[in-house]
Amino acid sequence: MVTQVSEIYLQKAKETTRLKRRKTVVRNRIEQKKLMRESLKATKREAAEGKSRYRLLKMMRNELRDEVNRVINDFVRLRALETLVMQELGFF
Image (cartoon, rainbow, N blue to C red):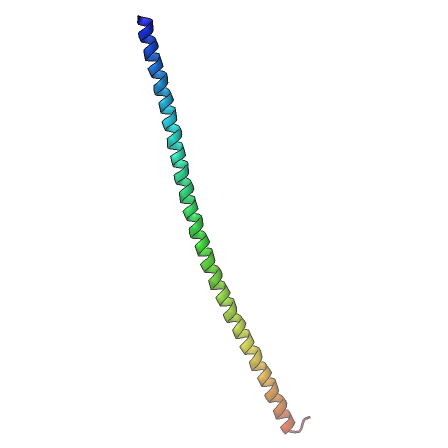
């Protein structure tokens, strides 16, 4: 009789231990998924920031290209004016 009672307590203790292990495993999985979600959100946020930075840099590049083209055109016009003045002064 005592052995049967001991056996029952032993079985309950084993079951309790198994349940605690399962709960721990489930808690760990939940924590891992939470960390993965946070990591994914951070990655998406960084990707959005990267896209914004890319668009800004592209816009700045285009503005600089336009400025360079304006300066080149100014030099071409200046050169044409210089040539015209030189012709009128009889240097050519």
